Image 1 (cartoon, rainbow, N blue to C red):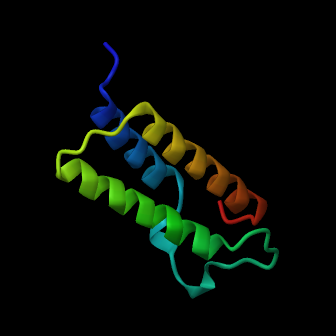
Image 2 (image 1 turned 45 degrees about the horizontal axis):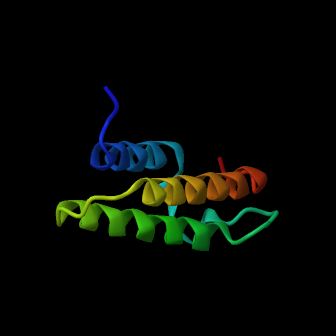
Image 3 (image 1 turned 60 degrees about the vertical axis):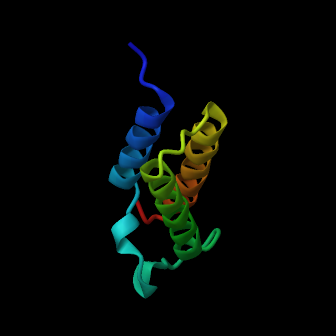
Length: 87
């Protein structure tokens, strides 16, 4: 059985938090090479996750477009972090 969009969003958020260094947001997060500001990107993604956690707690149901948008955003940010040798 496929999960509904609420369960899928919870799973996506857990996967993002497990995969990306969300807890390493601090000034020394920057590396020697920089291709996009990793600190700003992680902060932005963290804000988006907090927004969706609040929305889910309020009973708002995400649609497939919302899931896709968050997943694409996380993949792009992950690519920048990999390029900057931070993960």
